[in-house]
Length: 132
Image (tube, rainbow, N blue to C red):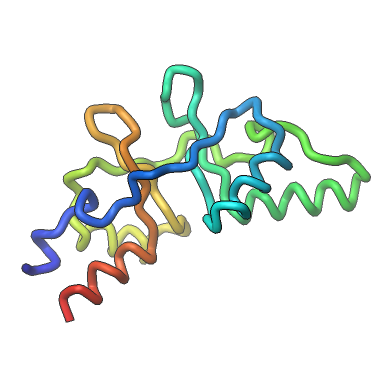
């Protein structure tokens, strides 16, 4: 199977940890650490992807807390809003190019405007390794 014929759907994670915008950010960080993941989609009550909380965003929490002597806040205050998303049919080649051009480490994956997974740089490497 050639890399061009492999799609995001073939390698995306589907057992997702999702966060809510009004969730305490310290609880969200704990969830990320507990699940050994570097970021998670933030969804509203209707299931719409409204942001992503990444390790980089979490470091802002630590710096803000240390500098201002404030603890936490809401996920919405720290998340990256309106993240770029991918369709399940996106080819792994296109995704690999996106990872080279964009600073992101992961993308939420959508099917008919519904969150169905998440794909990361590591997933691209897994796809490449399967071809070797």
